Image 1 (tube, rainbow, N blue to C red):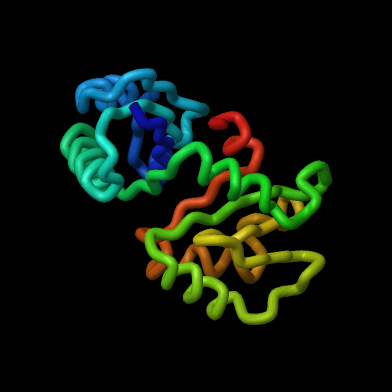
Image 2: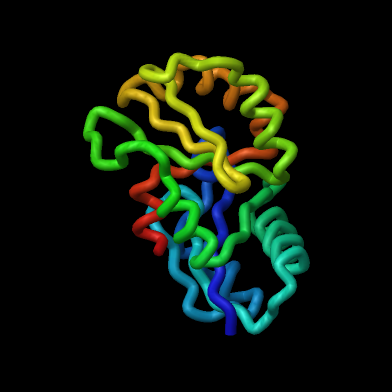
Length: 174
């Protein structure tokens, strides 16, 4: 058995409602065990005897689309990879005045595009750093929709290819 974590993009926002119980049922219906949801923002930890990540991702996305009626996109990651991403967070995650975020992308090229589009953000107001397949972002609380990078993330081109999580949520998943 392999442990996996699925991070769903765009659920419980913008009219796409996915209840945790139904989400667990959907994953269990795919034959996964140990299914556990964390918070109501599309985070699922589970076990599978299947090792082909691409096939798992495709099957999960299809099942989510069929069950909940939206174009599903997920990040599928192992707990060890997620641990490495969390451990590499380059900012002070204990700073209560900040929102420690990790932005996941569908492909490494999307991370490149995000960093290029961000340009030279203000390192105090909108600190960014490229990680291994992610962008680390640590904006001041209350500004997460107003900063330059927030506006980049809100662009239609990035909505279907990115999802972000607060570092604290990722820690709960682990």
